[in-house]
Length: 146
Image 1 (cartoon, helix red, strand yellow):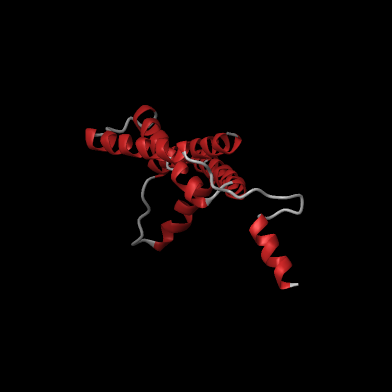
Image 2: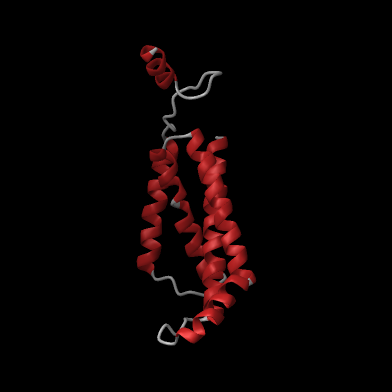
């Protein structure tokens, strides 16, 4: 249950981070790539934007929580559950960015939620670990080589 909570918080960090990045980039605008003299100013605006910095920090938080999750559970369990960030991002985009989310997108989000529920109902599949760390299978292979 603790791993599921970590993945849930990680997904929320990802969705919030992406929302901040989107908001920040909309405020900065698109770069004029045909005019190299403006590239430095655009890049400076990007790296000094508080919204971009906050989004990057939240995505870094997601990354480290994701690493913790992978240490605790199988990739085939963790990865699908992180797709909860798509669900959260759609709600954040609708509420904070005032995006028009079509019924096609909501239908897709419903499908994602069904998939997340199915994956969460299963076990993480991670083999038990002993005091020495690593899986029991890995320790057996290591002992057999000696």
